[in-house]
Length: 143
Image 1 (spheres, helix red, strand yellow):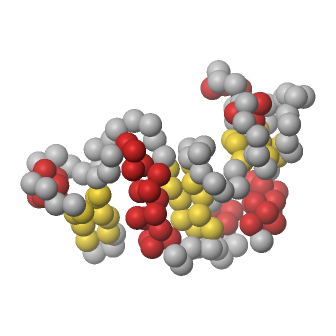
Image 2 (cartoon, one colour):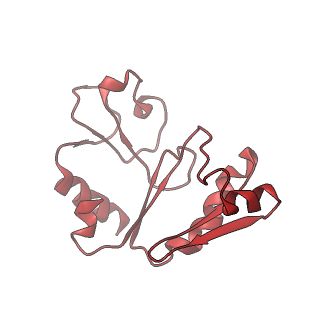
């Protein structure tokens, strides 16, 4: 991301997880407001703001739609872990994870970013250690 911001771009990021994380602090007023039934709870401080909005597992994909207004002024939005998204996708893969690359199982990936050696990639491979080139190629793809 720093490669993009150094180029003057405003970047937003979204991280998906399959684990339940409590983003709010149990016992705090904002947490208690949610427990009491508030649909959305916002926190506004001197330098940061946050909002908590619960959704069901079935509504997980539409949660991005609720966040969309927060990203309107971004030049680029990087989303991690949303394999079902209808958007240009790349895979960042390391052999050390012990998992097979998704690129071998799903189609439509624009590239795989890795420094691990394989010869059976069905798409272009970008060197993980070359952030400048990765940024150049992503910006070319996104126009």
